[in-house]
Image (tube, rainbow, N blue to C red; front, side, top):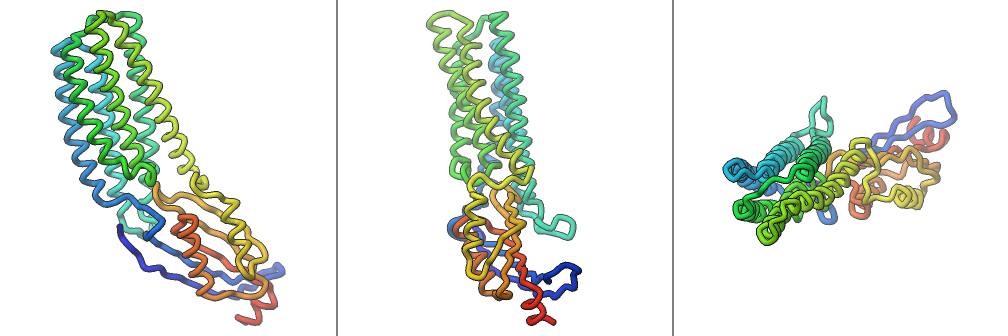
Length: 327
């Protein structure tokens, strides 16, 4: 985890506006990556690489054995796993892009590419669910004989690979929506493989081929619920919603409670990536500009208490005090 020194900027300007008071602007941008704010560790690159290699190899094996044994269930699952490889590639690409330095066109860098990746990942999961659902309905209408032995063996390999890959991403799933997307993909796949093994054993014991599509239907519901949550959260982030872990009202109360603050307005809180949050606010302080120490302390408190790491505060004072300080 990289640590950045806190730095504060304060610019006092006297403006001749045609309304009744002037403005003094205090801008303080805190970029803390310290205690209390967990960013996705750098070694997720290794997790992505391992996951992509293992799952790509498994897609080839599963599709080949599906065709050899005549099991459309394995072929369909191989297609689902292929969507996961694409999902991992998209998520990995976003984590790399997120580390790009800001420039004059992309002043936050490409941090928000992680939000875009979470959105694409959720869409891919839902497409995969749709594809499996279609196959399942067809299986109910036209039950096919299944080679249960091959089905169980290949799906068992899938459990090991998908569970192993999911574990690589497990510790980052609460702090980064993009990592959560990768984790959900792999966990959903492990569930699919478990379902296929259970269905294979049940078919072997009973000879009832409709068990296969019934199991598939249950799995679809499980994946669908997880995918919907990921889609909802990534859409909210895309629309600059206040992050779910931050209470806008509490932040407003905290700012109003600061010494010298008479009113807070234009308070905006939004996600600039799946791990970082920004805030801008105007503080009306009729007693005069409080100075850099006040802004530095405010930025530090917002980061430690609310996990907001990019803070810009504009201080507004009344006309007389503003003129007394700057004219």
